[in-house]
Image (cartoon, rainbow, N blue to C red):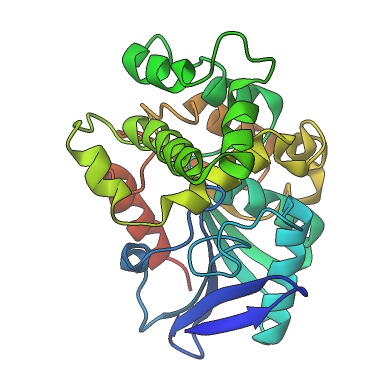
Length: 299
């Protein structure tokens, strides 16, 4: 495994695949905290493209695992620059999904000269409206049982918000509480991220990746407004307005409603939007098909 030291504390796990002389594509994973997986490699033509995968601070195989110390959006933006400099790559196509769209857009706003193209799947804007929808009852009407399970882990008498209560238990609780609340947070997300997901699929998916980093990192970032000013992306959209952008979004996305993708597309001058059948997951057949189609067109 390859590791790159980005601070006194953090070491990023990264992998580079494909044609050394191919078009560089930077894959920016979601979560925050999810890390990249072997399955993420299915989108790319490694004969044609040079693809950089990395686990963001505290995520998956990066060390220290699950650490929220020195872990903010600006830290992650700076890390991307350090990694690209280390790999001697000046300009990339950035492919981000979910939280990866937030980080990707913030990165592009601050470093437009390093972005040749944006490919964004499942738009999450990191603003109050997006966060509130996901964590403050936006899904209740569609998924009442799942919302009730997530909400009811927080005592009614608690003065903390739901995400703050979970974060407190994941950081300050007993080992048993840390394990329980990490699982419950991830269970909530996975239960709604894919259309018609079965009750049997959820624990099976949770068994395939280190969800503990996803849970603590999401709670850490989302209770802190993703460490960006409110509506940072739209307030700075002029800095990326002409960057060629492709947006792919599931029509039935329960985590990131499609209206956010429509709004982002409307504010960009060189953007195309594909709204396809599916939820939030990139494994939805129509989303996966469109992603592969678009990536194959990258030269």
